[in-house]
Length: 268
Image (cartoon, rainbow, N blue to C red; front, side, top):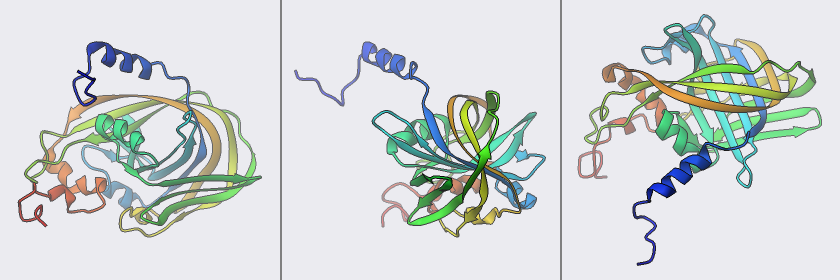
């Protein structure tokens, strides 16, 4: 019988895929990072429990082009500073990606809030422009000019917080208890420059980041970096407490409450 591609894969094929993914070379990205202080009450309002606000109400947007051989990727993240226990880190609200493949690993494995979108990073001489767009709306734009080099930082460890969950089959919450994931990233930088510029947040009903305005710009940089990451589940969280925030993951806030086909909402 000819190979049936949807059939079960053998142990050797599974092991080969795992080995290949574990020996990837360093993958470098080029892009912009902007950090600013926003309104403390707004930052606190978007954090699901058990996350707490960090000491400073910071927002961080990253907009990058990733140098994947034969498969260039645009990747973005819009995150707020948060803390869990004694760990400070970032809680991403939306992570636009330009390819479906980039969504799968992060979303299914780690619980990252990744969505298909448009990611732009442009540099013309000293002028830099970067943006994140979805549904035809560039809801974040960073623009400015290179004003000088910066010293390379030491390799850095950073923690991102994610909630991993699945909507229930019957539309009543989740299938199983959600879990809180700590994703620990190790980052190395090989080029870094200061950008003098600004951040523009545009209104979007799908990505309402305009609710987190720039009150004080901390800084904008343009650089090249490589990152690897490891995730771990640190605790199971209350489904009841997380459910009011689950709409952050979807363009339609009611989608989390959809019933299966044949029910009142699912039979349209």
